[in-house]
Image (cartoon, rainbow, N blue to C red; front, side, top):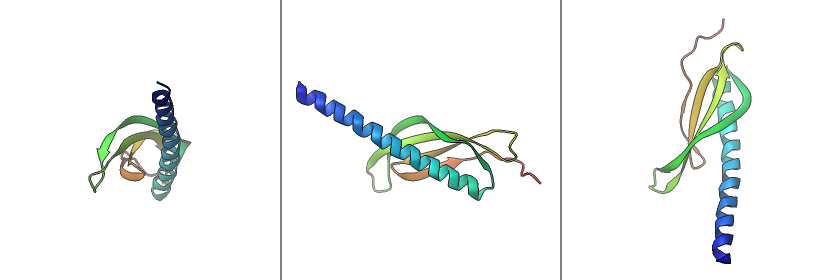
Length: 102
């Protein structure tokens, strides 16, 4: 019984630490995407909205995490965006169309 409890606690600890590192990776990738598109990265944060399983190109199962964040082209409007990490790699991202400020 004690070994089962230790294994469960170890798994929870691993998941929590892994989630923190992936969140930091998502913030870094979000900043890079936003900088390339000349947008403002609002609140300097991301929120994990979904976790599921996915397969990488080698067929290995990894966690597929979706992160939501907001950007602004001009500082007044907020555009909802998302990026998807498969393991530690950027799988896809979406920033809605917007009018560029003059």
